[in-house]
Each structure stands twice: as C-alpha cells, then as structure tokens.
Length: 234
Image (cartoon, rainbow, N blue to C red; front, side, top):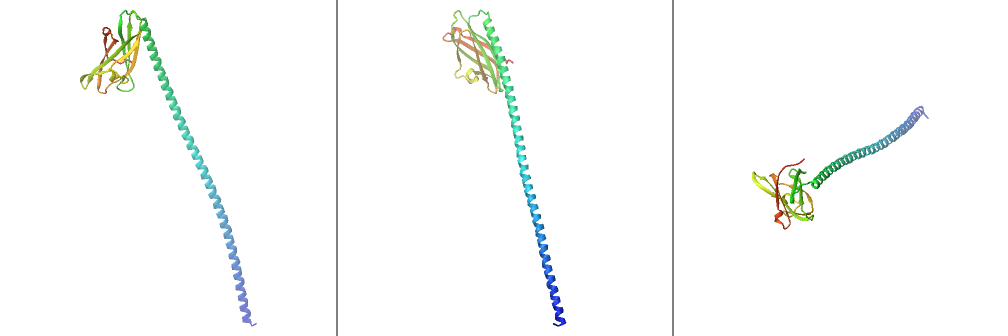
C-alpha cells in the first residue's frame, strides 16, 4: 500500500469514528430530551389532576355554602311568619276577649235592667270600622218584656240614610249586609237578641243615620221604628 492509500484509509477511519460518535451523541441527547419531556408531561398531568380536584372541592364547598344560606333564609322566613302568625293570634284572642267582656256587660245590664217598659224594644245599635274602607261591623240589641215569657218571632229591618253624589239616598238592609237574601231579618227569642253583621256601603255613599224597624210577627201593634245617628265606636 502506498503512503497515499494509507493516508486516505486513516482519514476514512477518522470520519467513520466521528460519525459514530455523532450518532451516539444524538441518541443520548434524544434520550435525555425524551426523559425530560416525559418528566415534564407527568408533572403537568399531576398538576392538572390536582387543580381539577381542587376545583371540584371548591365547587362542592360553594354548593354547600349556598344551600346553607338558602336554609338560613328559609328558617328566617319561617320564624318571621311564625312570629307574625303568633302576633295575629294574640290580637285575635284579645279582640275576642274584649268582645266577650263587652257582651257579658251587655247581658248583665239587660238582665239587671229594671225598666218597666213593656213590649218590643230596640235597645242599642253599635257600629265599628271593619277591614276595608267602606266596611263596618254592626251590633243590634233587640229585647222584649211581656207578662208571658214566651218566645216570639220578630222581623228586623233597617235602612241607612245619607247622601250620594250630593243627593239624599238610602241603602236598604239586604244591600248593605250582603249575607242577607231578604230585605228583613227574621229572628226568634224570649228576652233579648243580639244581632251581628257587616255593612258594605257604596264608595260614594256618605251615611248619616240608621233607621231600625222591628215588629212581632202578625202583630202590627208591636211595630217600633228607631232612629240612630251614624256614629262609629272604638
């Protein structure tokens, strides 16, 4: 082999060795990059899973707090409604108590009354404001004194006189008390009778007085007509 051939062989060997080293180096770099990328990917996946879990836990906590807030609001509303119901119940009981005390006083006065007037009498008319601008509670007390303590049938009627559009007007009994079907009320009693009801007057009607008419059945001689001014009691 000539010196030139030996030189070329050495160069070729050097290039082959260098290429081999280059390939090994590339393989090492690729492996390192792959391992680094794999670790980075794994870390990202772990972080993603942790974040997703934390988000789910946060949502659960938010839902729990919202439900707790709704529960408290409902409880407060229930408590408020219960308190208002209790207050209304107390007010109703107080009103019933006052009414019963008033009735007891009325009955006592009627039983202790030493008025010797005989026959049918209209003892009193009481008017009070009812719920509603044009609604009014009424109480009529009718009594009878006779030698024979027998029950009698009595017809009670009334008219509310006043003004409507500046002109004189009158509202009959069955138009004022919507619970009545007839223009008069038939009652039966022995000593006295307390009638209760509610007037509902037209909005443009201004009451001035109540004219009460009572009469025993089939006995025109017992007719009584009593005029009461329109006056509201407390």
